[in-house]
Amino acid sequence: MNNPQNIVSTIDSTCYLYLIQCGDGSSYTGITTDVERRFEEHRSGGKKAARYLRGRGPLKLVFKALIGDKGMALKMEYRVKQLSKLKKQALNQGNMDLNLLRDWDIE
Image 1: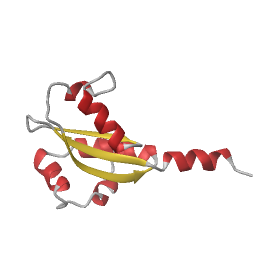
Image 2 (image 1 turned 90 degrees about the vertical axis):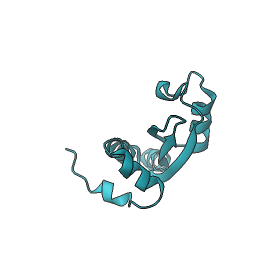
Image 3 (image 1 turned 180 degrees about the horizontal axis):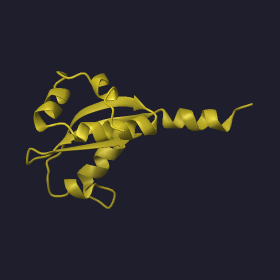
Image 4 (image 1 turned 180 degrees about the vertical axis):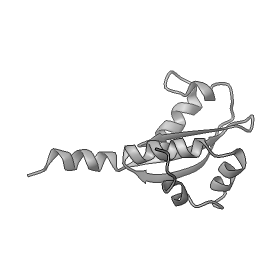
């Protein structure tokens, strides 16, 4: 017999963190369960697109990483948003270990 809590944790364990580079050089950080779907929503500029990204094209998906549960994904999103532009670029280029951000104490 399946335990409903196991089903929920399986669903929640598929959150990704992603970064989008905008045409104006700025970046956008978000979380989702389906990066390709969410990126296409942003690119389309429709009702589900982030307001920040509207009119900032062309958009380029520059980074994505499987984080795990939604709670950790939200924490990681916050931590990445606190990074300077240079540190975000280092993350995009693979010159920064994402796991270092997991150890930050933001309480």
